[in-house]
Length: 319
Image 1 (cartoon, rainbow, N blue to C red):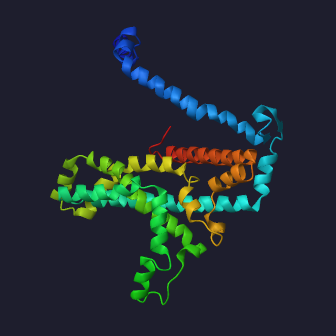
Image 2 (image 1 turned 135 degrees about the vertical axis):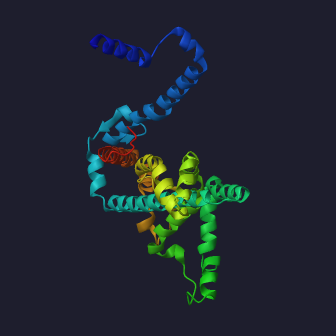
Image 3 (image 1 turned 90 degrees about the vertical axis):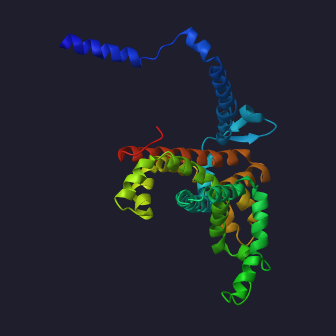
């Protein structure tokens, strides 16, 4: 009996043991060449530039270069965390990032589910195509549309005044309290259709027999969504949520930079704008590098923490 078990175990080990041979390498030559090219691309454009992080620990001077500049240790980081402006941009970035994450994430899932419920195939494809077209518009165009729509003489004010919701036009672009909702709305309008593609693909992969069985049991559309669709795409939702959590501090740069003005600067500036201001505007590349480094490290920490929590709860995870 023991000998048979040992033979079966050995046979399984041989089956699952990866086999390496030059014949296999030759057979997958094209795949390996492309893999090597992407590996080189990643090293050159993603990992080698990390060496520039040393600027955050130096008082970088252009004439002296990175290695010739004076070493100042953590002085730049101490200045960052003692700077009230930096604390303000952290608040702005975090708040806008969380609002954008929740708004775009929920609307993408809801839109994908609603789109899946459309029975007319041609209408469904038309709606889907129209919905992800804004993704291909640049933020320059989007902010231009927002400025025109939200200006004192824009269509939004015209509708609100004519429907007697407002007694007089309002300058939305000069109200700090309106800036974050405007940014969230712009992100939802621009990215919902594009983000829904992944969820639609996940919904398409659900076994149709599950819906048929539910129909036989008398389940309606909402019951099917609640007990079949959502549980089936739950792994996809969690994986994408973990990825997007790492982008919370990537609240944006273009829309905030192009829509900012003196009246709303206190709520519009993000870490990216702060980095640009000090690096280019103040010619302090060391401080800009320190701010960018802080942002990257926090993003990595958020992903690791979220992934660990998902692992402990027995959910899907990234690693």
